[in-house]
Length: 173
Image (cartoon, rainbow, N blue to C red; front, top):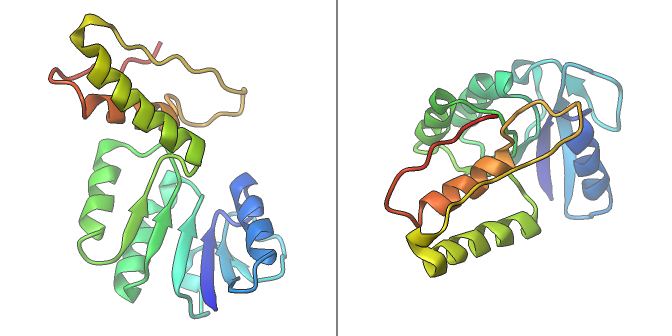
C-alpha cells in the first residue's frame, strides 16, 4: 500500500487526486497540506512540519510558495516527491534540480498524456521544418489562471528549444 502526502489537498487538482486515489486499493492518502484545512477522509495540515503520519511519497499540486519547505521535507525524510505545480521562477527550478541530487524528484509542468505527446510532436515538427519557419505559442485561459505563461506553454517552448540551435525569447504579451 503506497501512503501519500497530498500538498494542495483541497485545491482543484487535489480534489481530483483524492477521487483517483479513493478508487484504488493499492494506495491511500495519509495526510494533506493546504491553507484550507477543511476536513476530509484524512488529516489536512497548514504545513508539512505538522505532519506526523508516515508516507511513501509526496504528490504536490499546491503553490510555488510551498516549494522550499516541500523540498526540505522531501530531502530530510528521503521521501520521493512528484511536483506538478507550475509558476516557478528560475531560482526555484534550480532548487528542484539541487534537491533531486538528494531525494527522488519527478517534476513536470503538465501530467496530461496528450500534452506530453504534443510536446514530442512539436519537437518532431521543428526537426522536420527546420529554420524556415517561425514558432509562436499563443494560449488563452480562464480569468482565474494564476501563472502566465502557463507551465504547459513553457513545457512546449522548452521542448521546441531542445531541437533548435538558436535560443528563443519567451515573451509575454
